[in-house]
Length: 386
Image (tube, rainbow, N blue to C red; front, side, top):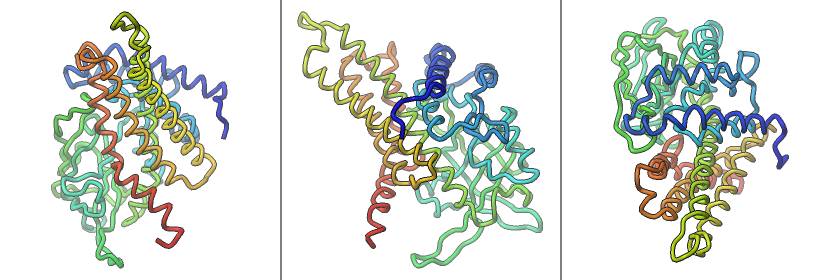
């Protein structure tokens, strides 16, 4: 693994960072205050990203994407993490799971998503099935050449702007040594399909403006041609997709932590108390030392995991380690940064309280910290027969 960035990677980092600083930062306070990204602003960000040539950078060149490696894309996501997630969703990164599209699906879903003509979102979580994906109740039954979907999904990120949904539902059951388990199938469902409703979700303290929605399916009829992958084999493509999303969360967390750290470092070098800069006090300087050490560790864990994917090496444990460490590091860094600023850190004049609240969800979505630790320990113990 190379420890320095190539000239191309440096260009990616510098370009995306400038974009975030110029196109996201000026709007963050308003999005935080209103909880809404005006549609015209989202469209403007998308068009600027398209013009910049970074839209769908995670998708292969063969389908019109940027063709970035996992490592390059992690660097891109790290810089996007510095800005508002509500705005960052318009810096288009279609779900990699769409690469499973075949035949007519490519022209109907994959290619428009890569071109920025359609937005996708992914729906897996249910009110009674979060980490226990096999416990989902949303189901589909075959009816001739069609399938009828019934049930509810919630916590579905940015479904409010999605043109179609990638939804996982139960389509059967199988017996296993540990009891019956649901067979899962993935469907592509268009907004506006009869029996399919997208409603506003819950008010969240994290990532205001980045909407979560509730999806309802009431005898929603879809064709067999809208099955992504194979019937009952939804987990096969889901597992590949989960690699990417967990790395994205880790990279975003590192980028956000570096922005927070920079604010704390500058403040410690400027703020005076008791006749000297507060950075001279060990109680502050040691906080800064711990913060940057944990940030760098999370950064390298994330980049190393991405590099392993590029080398076609097993990376399940490494990705889980990056996700759990980066998200827990972000919680520590945002909390300590507020401590460095004192009372001002909690005021709306600064973005620190927002970062602090935003950090909380990172340890929950895309696999909780407990799930990541389960993955890590299982990878360690299974080869030993435990």
